[in-house]
Each structure stands twice: as structure tokens, then as C-alpha cells.
Amino acid sequence: MKLKKLGHVLIRAADQEKSKRFYTDVLGFGVSEHLPNDAAFLTLGDDFHTFDVAQVGVSMPGGAGSSSEPGLGHIAFQVDRYAELGEAYKALQDHGIEIQRAVDHNSQRSIYFRDPDGLGLEIYYEVPNALKVFENGRSDEDRLLPLSKAGEPLPAWLSEEWPKIGAPATG
Image (cartoon, rainbow, N blue to C red):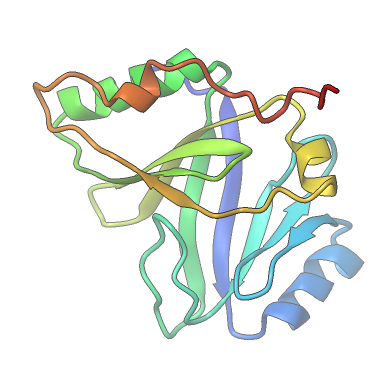
């Protein structure tokens, strides 16, 4: 498995708006997107998001659930190529790690699992121009993707050509 970088960290905040203001006004993050009843996706530059702030009680994919207390939701690691997402999926299975879910977020596809202490982790591939995709509105539907069991072939979505979302519109 070859991870590219630490992609983003998601926290659950007691007061999402107050936390969003702290991270933007004090620490200089920009807001790339803030969906109602979801997370505020914050950025430090060209990447779509590097830090996400969700409200306590909002269930986020791969997080520690809809906990009623502020804290860590999940830590995400980005891969450089879509094929590497399949390699990561297989490596997790080979190590006996249960993949909890896989999600198509329109601008990225993600695999969610837990570390030995139960912390939520994510490995994802993000389209190269994800920030532009979000500026135009991504219609995030968070579609669940099918999983396979260890020893079975990888799910078909990992071998298909993807993404097409980032391509400029034609016609």
C-alpha cells in the first residue's frame, strides 16, 4: 500500500459554527464547502479539504458514530492514483482489517475502517480538480459502494475506469 499524504482530519464539534470561525478566522483555513446537516470542509490551499468540522450528533461515514461528545471523527489518508485505492483495499483485507464501508462522494471514493483502538480511518482517492468540482456544487449524495470479503475478488467499482466527474463539460 502506498499512501500519498495525510488527507484530512474530521472532528465533531460541540458548536460547529463557533469551531468553523475559529479555524477560519484564527488559523486561516478557507471554507471549500459547508453542506447543511454535514461537515464544514476546510482547506489550506489547493486541496479540497484538509480539516472537516461536523456537529456533535451528526453521523459521518467512517467516524466513531454519532457520538454525543466532541472529538475525533476520523483521520483520512489520500492515495495518488485510483488504482492505489484498490491496492489499499486488498492490503487491508490481507492484514485481516475489516472494511466497514466504502462510499462514493462524487469527487472522491473512500474506504473506511478502524485501527486497533477503534479510531476511525479512511483511505481515499480524490479527483485532481476536486476544489473546482466543489466550487460548482458536487451534489454530494454519499452513495454506499458494495464490499467484498477477504479471499473474494475486489468489488467491480475498484476496477472500473473512474473518475469521469472531474472532466470538463462538453456540448
